[in-house]
Image (cartoon, rainbow, N blue to C red):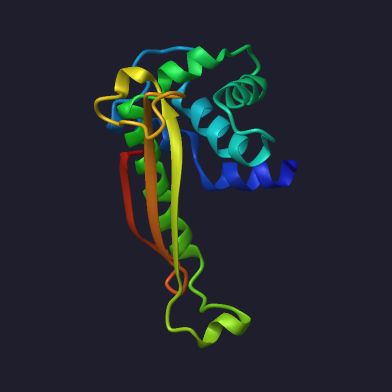
Length: 168
């Protein structure tokens, strides 16, 4: 990942803002080396740069950018209901900010469409302790997983809906 891209992200996302969102979500209340800011940057940059998207790979990447060794279990223990709320709040705030920055119509051949909707659903594995709240589909490999559903209007460049459910 290029240094200029990381610099742009850090200008767009302020450290104090992440701390406030984490506090509001009840995430990372205890002071530790693995802060909500480090978890955020590890997830944001790790999903785009890790070849095999696994919890162990994200833990290695997050530890590497944070400057200390981090096990898969340590990261896994931080992925709680409060962490999901933290990421949801971050996503909502950043998508609203991005939509204010770009007020353009759809480019090129897409300009003839009145609206273009982008729908995505991503699955995130969780600790099995959360299996009652977020049940997984394939319980032989993991007991708990959540699915983040997002609907975005590309013509308005605005998130219309975000919901978090169990994978099942």
